[in-house]
Image 1: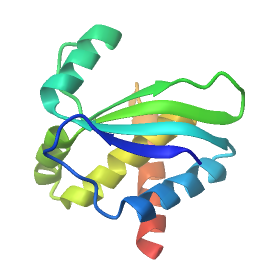
Image 2 (image 1 turned 135 degrees about the vertical axis):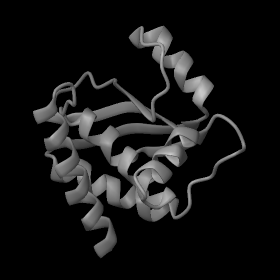
Image 3 (image 1 turned 135 degrees about the horizontal axis):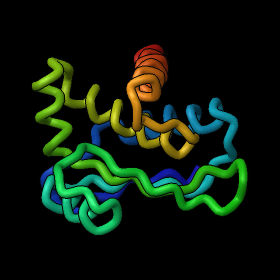
Length: 141
């Protein structure tokens, strides 16, 4: 899979990148998709907020924004923007490890590309259930 990791600045680097990319590739296949190019772009709060304003017309901070770029049914392709700053705040807020929370938002983006949404409470519960399921799978590897 052409899964790649990019950095908008030099304040963050993903640890265990190869293992995480391998795990995410297995999730893509498990969800019934053929792998296509998926880019993870790690950035700061302000940059992600600007993306949120420009493309989604939302004026607030968030941890992850996903853009589905697939033009071929069954092939996963997209861009997943992650604010390492908001993820760090969330890890403290929810009392989880920082890199555990990084993995959560990465799989969250993959699940969005697979067709999952989180606009209402039922969808949010299902999204969280799937995140937990795949996070457990990472712990097993």
